[in-house]
Image (cartoon, rainbow, N blue to C red; front, top):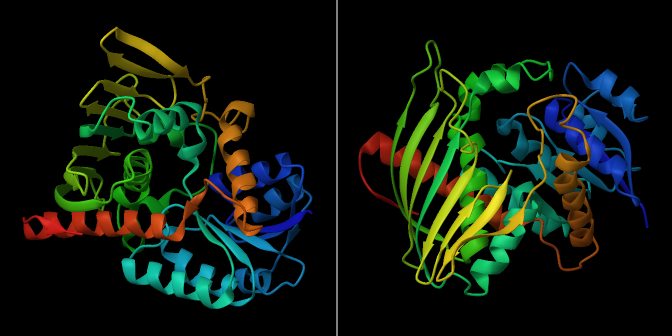
Length: 345
């Protein structure tokens, strides 16, 4: 059975999800709305361009909607779509507040529709292998982790994607940490099965004339006793440290795990270091490669998993509670920095 999709937003992630839908054999993109690039995106993918988001979400020829608009629009768009009987996949972050996440969850429960979150990192080769290793006890009990997420913003802006990047500085979208940390929080929860318990953080703004956070250092305690350091920044003055765009290093009781989602997953145990899996080069930094087979594999698999969730089948795609957990942890980071205190989630 073909699932008929709509998309809100026409930027880089709107095009990403349009391509993922095109690649899936039982998914069809019917219409989209929003953004200055909407007309071109609709033409490229043979979809209709709706006159407004409200008109799009009220159409009766759509089964599911993917939300790729700025963060602060997610809650209202999701609730409208759910109230119209649509299933919803929200590109991370789920929303900008825990209260909005709760409103979305309540709307999904009332409507009896699937509400899922776009944590595409779950579908990368190395990440899935790491999850199997950790959950099976391959490195023993997880004790500590280090997560690195430095972003050289000019690489993205110069990648040929075009568009308006003003949303990065919009206070309505909270700050860079709300864009980066959801993947970090979700990966740790997904890898270990543990929840965030306590957070301490320092959030700063280093870029000139920027009204929002652009750099965060945090310490996170999980319910299994594991402790984690988290570094995120888009204030880099030059290209990032090699191999550090997104890196997770974990110390377990029986071994070490060095997870690079874009290169190799390496394990250190009694036999020394060895490679557990390798990810072909994703090429997400350029318009000519970003929509190629390697990068699109994760998003296409995610669309398939979302469709499984719609059908009531087991699915890896992020759940609404997964989305809420990340927002709660990030809110705790910002509160901790503001109050200079530990915050219990």
